[in-house]
Structure formats: C-alpha cells, structure tokens
Image (cartoon, rainbow, N blue to C red; front, side, top):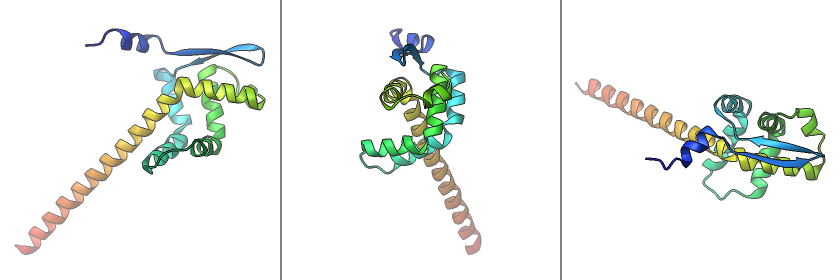
Length: 148
C-alpha cells in the first residue's frame, strides 16, 4: 500500500525552473505521451547507454560525456521536448547556459533514460534466455530422435 507520495508523483510530474538567457525555463518530467516520443527520439542513445551499463565497469564522467556528445542532436531534441523550447534556441546557448540546461534536464529526466536502458538490458537477456532454451530443447529433441 502506498503512502500517497508515489501517487502524487504520478499525478504531478516533477518540474524544475531555472533562469537561462533572461527567461525562466521549466523542465518537465516526461509523462506518458512525451515518454513515448522520448523513447523514439532517443532510441540509439538508450541503446548505447544500455551497452555502457552492460560493460559491468564503473562509468566515468568521460564515458557519460562521450555518450551525450555522440548523441548531441538527440539530446538537444530531448531537452526541447522537456522544456518546450526550440532546438535552435538550445543550440545557440553559450557553454555555461547550455551546461545549466543540460544538468537541469538530466536531473529531471535522467532516471527515465536509466530505466529505459535497464529495461532494454532485461529484454535482451530474456530474449537470449528464451533463444537458449529453444535451442537447447531443439537439440535435445533432435538427439532423442536420432537415438531412437
């Protein structure tokens, strides 16, 4: 039974407002519809994040910087989705304002992407397990048929 706090998080998504370039920018946690769009926009980003997790090593800041940099266009589109700002406006930000925006976006929506990457890994593992079971059963059945 929940204490109501989780219900409130579902009904009222998290937001964060920060001043950037003379205006207040509101960062919204992805809801259902925005989450569907974010999964599509960020598919290769999520896949690569899952691969990073799958290495089983500690993830360094340079690893995450490289991940974000290699998906810069997707990250900008995902930030635009969370803020309602245009991609052009985001791309025109200076380094300091851009880093503020990036940090705020990740604070609000980073857990979403971590969950997506973890779900991706679980799905891959289940597919491999099922394929292994099917192959194992097929091999056993074939061996049984050959010995009879």
